Length: 211
Image (cartoon, rainbow, N blue to C red; front, side, top):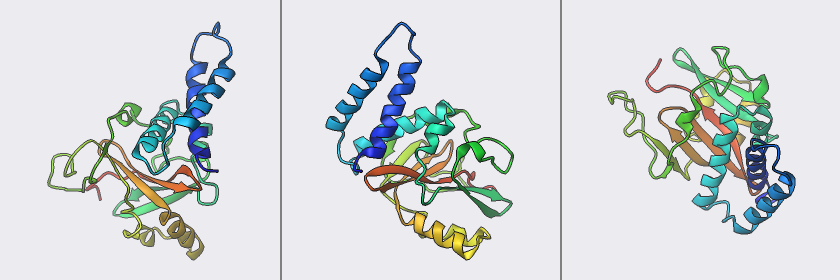
């Protein structure tokens, strides 16, 4: 299972790119399979930031294509992905198993935003903090990632009107978070490294400093 999830997403990423090429080009499947084998040989360990950045580039590509089927491949079946929004001052959490079935509280698709904001030089450094006195409501702006799990200790689910069964599952899922990505112009994404693969387990869609 080690590297399976990452190689799967990357192979899908290259396959989607290949499908956008002119029809006269042949052997697409063979070229993707060859690239997949090359990736298997070259890919650094899952905990290496280079592999995560590689994975993240595929994640961005999938969202930019609005590819629900591919995006669903990033959902760990046992946990789903928990999407956090806000309803007034209180958070609202939705557990999602299929992105095609999900609508935001404003009845929009998950990726109903300018996906160009996801394309950035993601920096591995301390994550920005919310600062309501700052112009952009963050202590710094840009794209940042860290091997950190700030969500686990926030216990945000305690304010989301969940049943005990739902809360237990969310807490269990939160403990798997391995890496956090903060895009100050977009959302905060939480990824879990489970059984050698990267999975999207939480997305915080809330805008800072908005009650």
